Length: 198
Image (cartoon, rainbow, N blue to C red; front, side, top):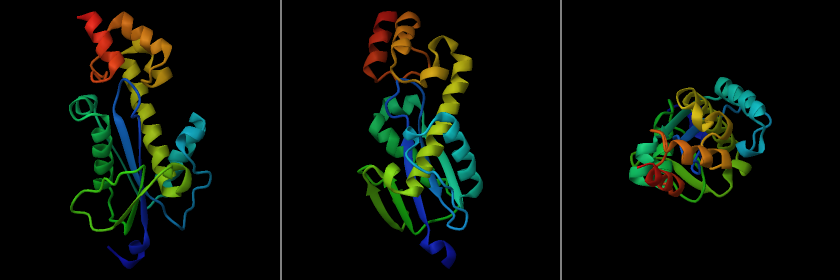
Protein backbone atom coordinates (compact mmCIF):
# COMPACT_ATOMS: atom_id res chain seq x y z
CA UNK A 1 0.00 0.00 0.00
CA UNK A 2 1.43 3.41 -0.95
CA UNK A 3 1.72 6.38 1.38
CA UNK A 4 -1.04 8.05 -0.66
CA UNK A 5 -3.44 5.27 0.34
CA UNK A 6 -2.31 5.15 3.97
CA UNK A 7 -4.73 7.90 5.00
CA UNK A 8 -7.77 6.55 3.19
CA UNK A 9 -10.98 5.43 4.84
CA UNK A 10 -13.38 2.71 3.71
CA UNK A 11 -17.05 2.96 4.60
CA UNK A 12 -19.17 -0.18 4.89
CA UNK A 13 -22.94 -0.59 5.06
CA UNK A 14 -25.66 -3.08 4.17
CA UNK A 15 -29.17 -3.00 2.72
CA UNK A 16 -32.02 -5.46 2.98
CA UNK A 17 -32.06 -6.87 6.48
CA UNK A 18 -35.83 -6.51 6.85
CA UNK A 19 -37.35 -7.92 3.63
CA UNK A 20 -38.97 -11.34 3.40
CA UNK A 21 -37.21 -12.20 0.13
CA UNK A 22 -33.96 -11.70 -1.72
CA UNK A 23 -30.39 -11.22 -0.53
CA UNK A 24 -28.96 -8.93 2.09
CA UNK A 25 -26.47 -6.75 0.20
CA UNK A 26 -23.41 -4.85 1.42
CA UNK A 27 -21.00 -2.36 -0.06
CA UNK A 28 -17.57 -1.03 0.84
CA UNK A 29 -16.38 2.29 -0.59
CA UNK A 30 -13.11 4.20 -0.48
CA UNK A 31 -13.91 7.74 -1.59
CA UNK A 32 -11.40 9.81 -3.53
CA UNK A 33 -10.72 13.11 -1.72
CA UNK A 34 -9.79 14.66 -5.07
CA UNK A 35 -13.11 13.74 -6.74
CA UNK A 36 -15.84 14.69 -4.30
CA UNK A 37 -19.39 13.36 -4.66
CA UNK A 38 -21.88 15.93 -3.36
CA UNK A 39 -25.23 15.03 -1.83
CA UNK A 40 -24.22 11.86 0.03
CA UNK A 41 -26.59 10.81 2.80
CA UNK A 42 -28.40 7.78 4.14
CA UNK A 43 -29.87 5.98 1.11
CA UNK A 44 -33.29 5.77 2.80
CA UNK A 45 -33.49 9.59 2.71
CA UNK A 46 -33.08 9.73 -1.07
CA UNK A 47 -35.56 9.19 -3.88
CA UNK A 48 -34.78 6.17 -6.11
CA UNK A 49 -33.71 8.25 -9.12
CA UNK A 50 -31.40 10.37 -6.96
CA UNK A 51 -29.87 7.22 -5.46
CA UNK A 52 -29.16 5.87 -8.94
CA UNK A 53 -27.47 9.11 -10.03
CA UNK A 54 -25.32 9.18 -6.90
CA UNK A 55 -24.45 5.49 -7.25
CA UNK A 56 -23.20 6.12 -10.77
CA UNK A 57 -21.05 9.02 -9.53
CA UNK A 58 -19.68 6.98 -6.63
CA UNK A 59 -18.69 4.11 -8.92
CA UNK A 60 -17.03 6.55 -11.32
CA UNK A 61 -15.16 8.66 -8.78
CA UNK A 62 -14.31 6.39 -5.83
CA UNK A 63 -10.80 5.00 -5.51
CA UNK A 64 -12.30 1.59 -4.82
CA UNK A 65 -15.70 0.03 -4.24
CA UNK A 66 -17.08 -3.46 -3.82
CA UNK A 67 -20.54 -4.99 -3.54
CA UNK A 68 -21.31 -8.38 -2.00
CA UNK A 69 -24.27 -10.23 -0.51
CA UNK A 70 -25.56 -13.21 1.40
CA UNK A 71 -28.34 -15.13 -0.33
CA UNK A 72 -31.65 -16.29 1.22
CA UNK A 73 -30.28 -19.76 1.97
CA UNK A 74 -27.35 -18.25 3.90
CA UNK A 75 -29.77 -15.95 5.73
CA UNK A 76 -31.89 -18.94 6.76
CA UNK A 77 -28.83 -20.95 7.78
CA UNK A 78 -26.95 -18.25 9.72
CA UNK A 79 -29.77 -15.83 10.75
CA UNK A 80 -30.12 -12.35 9.27
CA UNK A 81 -27.69 -10.67 11.66
CA UNK A 82 -24.82 -13.06 10.92
CA UNK A 83 -25.63 -13.05 7.21
CA UNK A 84 -25.44 -9.23 7.20
CA UNK A 85 -22.00 -9.37 8.82
CA UNK A 86 -20.93 -11.98 6.26
CA UNK A 87 -22.04 -9.77 3.38
CA UNK A 88 -20.10 -6.82 4.82
CA UNK A 89 -16.96 -8.92 5.28
CA UNK A 90 -17.25 -10.07 1.67
CA UNK A 91 -17.60 -6.48 0.51
CA UNK A 92 -14.44 -5.51 2.41
CA UNK A 93 -12.53 -8.44 0.95
CA UNK A 94 -13.58 -7.34 -2.53
CA UNK A 95 -11.81 -3.97 -2.34
CA UNK A 96 -8.80 -3.66 -4.62
CA UNK A 97 -6.84 -1.67 -2.05
CA UNK A 98 -6.34 -1.87 1.71
CA UNK A 99 -7.45 1.31 3.50
CA UNK A 100 -5.82 2.43 6.73
CA UNK A 101 -9.16 2.85 8.45
CA UNK A 102 -12.60 1.26 8.16
CA UNK A 103 -15.88 2.80 9.34
CA UNK A 104 -18.83 0.41 9.59
CA UNK A 105 -22.45 1.39 10.06
CA UNK A 106 -23.92 0.01 13.27
CA UNK A 107 -22.59 -1.35 16.53
CA UNK A 108 -20.49 -4.27 15.31
CA UNK A 109 -17.15 -4.58 13.56
CA UNK A 110 -16.99 -7.15 10.80
CA UNK A 111 -13.46 -7.07 9.40
CA UNK A 112 -11.84 -10.30 8.23
CA UNK A 113 -9.39 -11.63 10.81
CA UNK A 114 -6.36 -11.02 8.58
CA UNK A 115 -7.01 -7.28 8.10
CA UNK A 116 -4.60 -4.97 9.90
CA UNK A 117 -6.15 -1.50 10.17
CA UNK A 118 -8.15 0.71 12.49
CA UNK A 119 -11.86 0.00 12.58
CA UNK A 120 -14.78 1.90 14.07
CA UNK A 121 -18.43 0.91 14.34
CA UNK A 122 -20.50 4.10 13.91
CA UNK A 123 -24.11 4.19 15.07
CA UNK A 124 -26.19 5.99 12.41
CA UNK A 125 -23.01 6.09 10.36
CA UNK A 126 -24.96 6.32 7.11
CA UNK A 127 -26.06 9.77 8.29
CA UNK A 128 -22.76 10.87 9.83
CA UNK A 129 -19.88 9.60 7.66
CA UNK A 130 -19.57 10.22 3.94
CA UNK A 131 -17.93 6.90 3.07
CA UNK A 132 -20.64 4.97 4.92
CA UNK A 133 -23.32 7.03 3.16
CA UNK A 134 -21.73 6.12 -0.17
CA UNK A 135 -21.71 2.44 0.78
CA UNK A 136 -25.35 2.69 1.86
CA UNK A 137 -26.30 4.08 -1.54
CA UNK A 138 -24.39 1.44 -3.53
CA UNK A 139 -25.81 -1.41 -1.45
CA UNK A 140 -29.39 -0.14 -1.77
CA UNK A 141 -29.22 0.54 -5.51
CA UNK A 142 -27.66 -2.85 -6.20
CA UNK A 143 -30.21 -4.71 -4.10
CA UNK A 144 -33.12 -2.90 -5.72
CA UNK A 145 -31.74 -3.92 -9.12
CA UNK A 146 -31.52 -7.54 -7.99
CA UNK A 147 -35.13 -7.45 -6.81
CA UNK A 148 -36.27 -5.97 -10.12
CA UNK A 149 -34.49 -8.84 -11.85
CA UNK A 150 -36.23 -11.34 -9.58
CA UNK A 151 -39.55 -9.74 -10.52
CA UNK A 152 -38.97 -10.94 -14.08
CA UNK A 153 -38.72 -14.52 -12.76
CA UNK A 154 -41.46 -14.27 -10.10
CA UNK A 155 -43.84 -11.52 -11.32
CA UNK A 156 -46.69 -12.72 -9.09
CA UNK A 157 -45.02 -11.29 -5.96
CA UNK A 158 -44.50 -7.70 -7.13
CA UNK A 159 -40.83 -7.52 -6.15
CA UNK A 160 -40.36 -4.54 -8.48
CA UNK A 161 -42.70 -2.52 -6.26
CA UNK A 162 -41.87 -3.48 -2.67
CA UNK A 163 -38.40 -5.01 -3.13
CA UNK A 164 -39.32 -7.93 -0.87
CA UNK A 165 -40.53 -5.95 2.14
CA UNK A 166 -43.62 -7.12 4.02
CA UNK A 167 -46.16 -4.81 2.40
CA UNK A 168 -49.85 -5.80 2.40
CA UNK A 169 -49.60 -6.64 -1.32
CA UNK A 170 -46.58 -8.88 -0.71
CA UNK A 171 -48.27 -10.65 2.19
CA UNK A 172 -51.36 -11.25 0.06
CA UNK A 173 -49.19 -12.72 -2.71
CA UNK A 174 -47.49 -14.99 -0.21
CA UNK A 175 -50.86 -16.26 1.00
CA UNK A 176 -52.04 -16.82 -2.57
CA UNK A 177 -48.93 -18.34 -4.16
CA UNK A 178 -46.86 -19.60 -1.23
CA UNK A 179 -43.13 -18.79 -0.91
CA UNK A 180 -40.79 -18.72 -3.91
CA UNK A 181 -37.24 -20.05 -4.00
CA UNK A 182 -35.93 -16.59 -3.04
CA UNK A 183 -38.08 -16.11 0.07
CA UNK A 184 -36.43 -16.27 3.49
CA UNK A 185 -38.00 -19.28 5.14
CA UNK A 186 -36.71 -18.35 8.59
CA UNK A 187 -38.87 -15.19 8.59
CA UNK A 188 -42.21 -15.64 10.35
CA UNK A 189 -44.60 -14.52 7.57
CA UNK A 190 -42.84 -16.84 5.11
CA UNK A 191 -42.95 -19.77 7.56
CA UNK A 192 -46.65 -19.15 8.03
CA UNK A 193 -47.31 -19.08 4.28
CA UNK A 194 -45.17 -22.17 3.81
CA UNK A 195 -47.24 -24.04 6.38
CA UNK A 196 -50.45 -23.09 4.62
CA UNK A 197 -49.14 -24.15 1.22
CA UNK A 198 -47.80 -27.55 2.31
